[in-house]
Length: 220
Ligand code: SF4
Image (tube, rainbow, N blue to C red; front, side, top):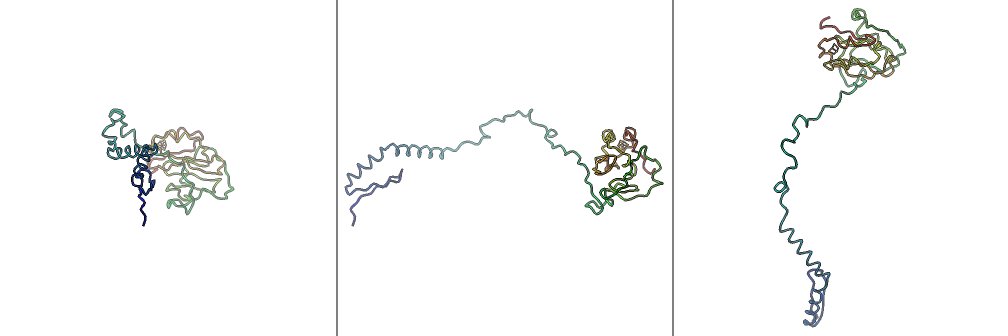
């Protein structure tokens, strides 16, 4: 049977052992005076104090950093819509059910056509199909021959040189650019995707340098 006395330091976990209890008490006193033990006690006391007094919420102590007058208005915080993308070159059988023609192909019938657009084309040409719901009048032989597009806002894509004046002039944003890679006159065209918004101001028809545009009032 052991007659040893033991002491485990609660601060550092050290085990002190001696058979004489008086000697062990002395060893404990000496141990508690060690600098490392004093430092541990101090740190433990600080931690306990911090837990007992949690910090106040920031909202209760801090004032707003901006005055109400400087807060942004709802209008200024609204997210602007992204710029209108260039319409995709969807072909027949594409994801748009209103598209029955293709802008790509092996068409070698390249034809440089000079303006102005033929105002009587509706009685002379056949409708070749639609692109995103917009009528396309043939002959069509993509990518070199793309015909005339539109019913009221009509652009001869074989005359158009992508000047862009029509897009800038239109007050109701009827057009957006459409990529037409491989076309000899220009590889993008003003696509009248919002033809139904036309207010017949004639601005686009009047500014088009090669006179590729013809505007028809509804029913014409
Ligand atoms: S006629 Fe006027 S509203 Fe219509 S597409 Fe041309 S510029 Fe736009």
